[in-house]
Image 1 (cartoon, rainbow, N blue to C red):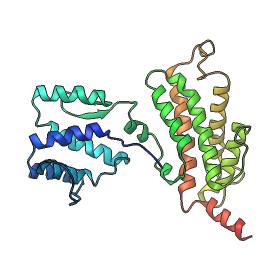
Image 2 (cartoon, rainbow, N blue to C red):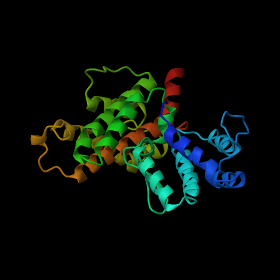
Image 3 (cartoon, one colour):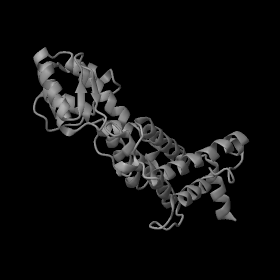
Amino acid sequence: MTIRSLVPLPVRRHFRDLSASYSTLRLIAGMWEDQGFTPSGDPNGESGERRGFWREFEDNVDWTDPGHANRVLRVYEALVDAFTPEELASTRKFMNRQGFDVDPEGRIRPNPDTALTVVATMPQSLTALRDPAMILDSFDRINRALPTDPAQAIGPAKELIEATAKTVLEELGMPFEDKTAKLPQLIDKAQRELGLHPQTAGPGPDGSQAVKRILGGLSNVALGLGELRNEGWGTGHAARRTGLRPRHGYLAVGAAHTWCQVILDTLADPSAPWRTQAADATVG
């Protein structure tokens, strides 16, 4: 899975440079260790002992992991505590250009359209996919639309469901017509292959009446979203969007996220019943 760095390189360089002016080695160690990081101990090309020591902690950060990225922001906040009001204002202006907000108290938050915010909305089971490009693109488009035009996010939300269904079928080696397959067919086939269709739910909790009822509702949610999109909502045709409110956009996005989460988590679950059923079919 390819996800770009959640903390841009200029931001990392900015705080690494500042560490040389505002910290001692002891304080640097405390900032990072308080957030669970340890130094790599590896040599690097940074000039200055403090910059080099700061870089050792950076070397042990997974910059594509939202948990790591958020903990790094807490490290930066600890460094910001030492700034004068003028220095804080300068860093706030710089960070705003990079997609982050720094409040008067020095707390750092990513803006809605930053990579860190986008990735935070994604199921962690995306990491199990060989090629999540279609799904990542849909998430990116949804998060760009939501802050300014929630109704326009309905189109990408429908496409998120379609991309998830296609990706799952590709992961499972199941054939489908990429250009002509309709969304209802893709939804039905993906859920059946994963044992998430009410008619195919296997033993255990997935086969209970309660879960079957939920799975039936899950199918209807995905189908309803496709129908909403096909009626013209979220297509960009303003004349056909009269009366659509932001709550409808958030409803559509929430429904798409739920369907995507269940599908991808089931695909990644090593003990999901569909795996046993698939193995039995192979043996048979």
